[in-house]
Length: 125
Image (cartoon, rainbow, N blue to C red):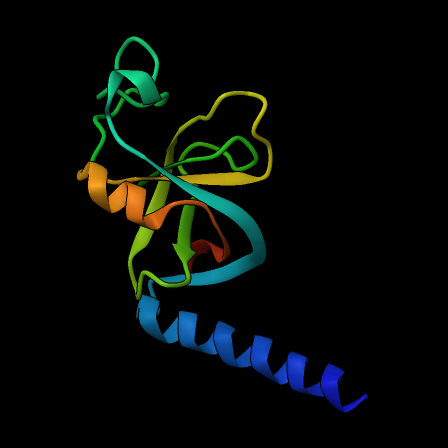
């Protein structure tokens, strides 16, 4: 029983931290854990238009690809501080319940690799 109480307190603490970091502009409406990968605008990692996202925007810092979240969804990913990401791209349809984070630098993307991350879906406060 004590472990369950500890986990509840930890989750509430993490949510409060997220709300603090976002500065009151957003509120957390959902949290989850997914496998996260990294990608670049390289021809081998994208379709025939490597710098253009599925939503028609240009790749840049803060862009993520996801098939299970709607385009335009604001997301915080633990491990990136108070940075707010936006879903603007899609992944190959075989990848469901994943997040792919765009990195400008290929070596940074390789260093990030594949890992499980906790993410928080945000809505305007």
